[in-house]
Length: 125
Image (cartoon, rainbow, N blue to C red; front, side):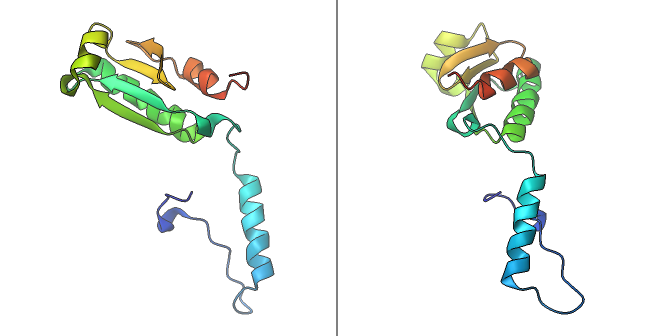
């Protein structure tokens, strides 16, 4: 939540008796943390890369899946455009969109949400 807008951060409720004490604020923060689903411990160690090109409807579909899964797990992701990188173009132009997990090819053309989630939460890697 560090990068989240202050508008979306949860605040402790104000009591009608006056300002809160530090103890109630800490208790509310602890309760709020307990309510939030916890991401798997290793998910933050991953990086998902979507290699795409402009005007590609499959790339748009893939990006929606990547955004959803990564947001749900707290995993950072990035996009790379093959029209701006000759090496990526030569390597992947027939497979666009391509999803890499930690620099290794995970899938291409269609992204399966559950398969990507498993790859990012598998504790054995």
